[in-house]
Length: 625
Image 1 (cartoon, rainbow, N blue to C red):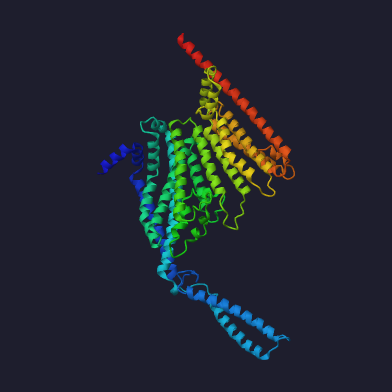
Image 2 (tube, rainbow, N blue to C red):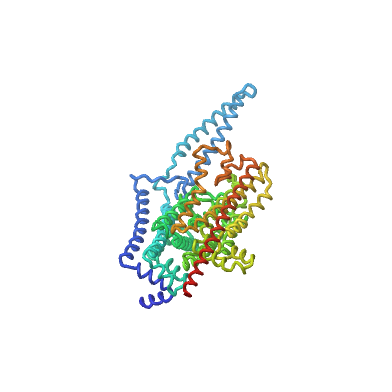
């Protein structure tokens, strides 16, 4: 039976069978089993320690009388309400006493009557004040079944978060390390030429490399389910968390594969970098002070599976654990004024759709990159759709209706946040679309050979849609797609003190700097050195970071001298204090610089095409002789 199942697995996905056979060793299975047993023991000893502290009179366990599993809660709250009423009554009696003690309204009988009433109320207040400050609930007054329900909710939450962190971080590390190992051993190219499709091989990696993690997680499901049901969390909500966690693992594991295929030049460090990046992201997303601020930053929260944890407690009779109870008020989340965070079904559906969209985009890039390591991660056509998707999502989160008086983000703030997203997006596009030397050389040779018969529109079509042509025109089109909402938004926005012209010039600065970086990166990728990608990354990073750092070190303040900032890689710092004419001159200078870089790139492409054509013709002539 087992052999027949293995044969069927091999027929369905040979790569998965290869991964499973390589990892399901006795020692590895023992480690997975031990990890799950450790989870059971950790939850058992946590609950035992809490209960021991609760029933042991010599050990302190603080339970506030306001907590719902204190049987004295209603009595305590009633005393508190009565104390407030008596204090208000005491204040009124004192006011009356002072009134009838005055010369105008003096009344001895009334004064004596009020003295008696004041003493009576004062005695009652003193008695209640002797009870009110005792906030700790006596241990014999604690509702044990309800207390256990709360503890099970705490353990359920902690187990969910720990499993989430381990699955995403360790799984990401394992996948990237596995690809690095395959690359180092030279077996990755062997897998590429196998008759399996790229999708089948990569799916086998996703399902097979973290197989021990999956086994350990499945073994913990009974404990997790029992804790959730004991905390009166609905079964459908528990399974909704599983669905989001599976979707999150699929997204992060797919991204790990793509990063592993693109980062072979890091020589083994890429697994630590990828795992560390996921850990840092989850740490920021899980931070209990990370609020939904109803701006485009809210989008990032949807990439962390813990986003739905608060909803798992919304049907229970007690409040959620502390680390979840203080978390983001995601009920206020909107997208184009659609209240996606209002219900658990809404947020789960939106998170799953978000994961599905971006996992699909990653797999488009994965299939391209796996089949040909030298090709661009995305085609130019795909990049246009990708940028449109990003901009639509960002705009949807930017136009949320403010529901919290403490949220102070304005439309201008949202524009700056979208701008920051676009900076990261276009740096990624430059890396994804820019072709390397050999690809550009082949394209230039093809264009050189057929240049006399090809029409001009065909060259333009090749620059817009072609796979091997330089990425500059495609980056320009993507800039038009990304900045069009900026132009329209700025043109329609009317707010006192908002300078539309400077805002439009700020967008123009973004376009100029992006085009300069794209052209510079393409020039560096034309170099003959084997470390072209590293040189391009380092150069663009230096161009973007060094000028503002130097200005800060030199103490050049934007309000005192904004002109140097306008000619740096961060001109937006000086826009507020610079004259419009100087800003226009700085933009013109940057356009001239981009023109020079484009001219140099054109020369290099022409030279490369001519050299390649001459070499090809020389080879043909020598073969004839």
